[in-house]
Length: 139
Image 1: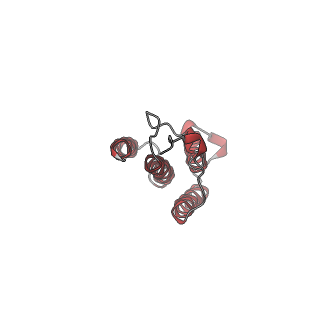
Image 2: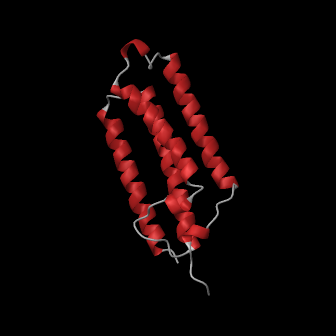
């Protein structure tokens, strides 16, 4: 059996990937629609909370793009098989959806609400822990 090489892995479009991308796009479109309708983006008084929303939405899109290049995904160690690569790709896509949801919650509720920040941090940590365990136990 030949040695596994992450550099040779190619990611093709799949139904799962398309669903993650469409869901993220819908969430971001709704977020920007709510932001414009509620005048969240008051350009006369542009603050850090506005920049955080924009940056997180861009990061969400970048994560979806990175999912097509698994050699750039850092899971703490070199993946040993294709199943680990598949799980790391899925994790990146899940985190992209989580970031888009966080942006929507920031705009819909309040960017200053500490519960949102706590929930987002806990969600990311739990997602990272669970996915890391699954990735490292997969064979």
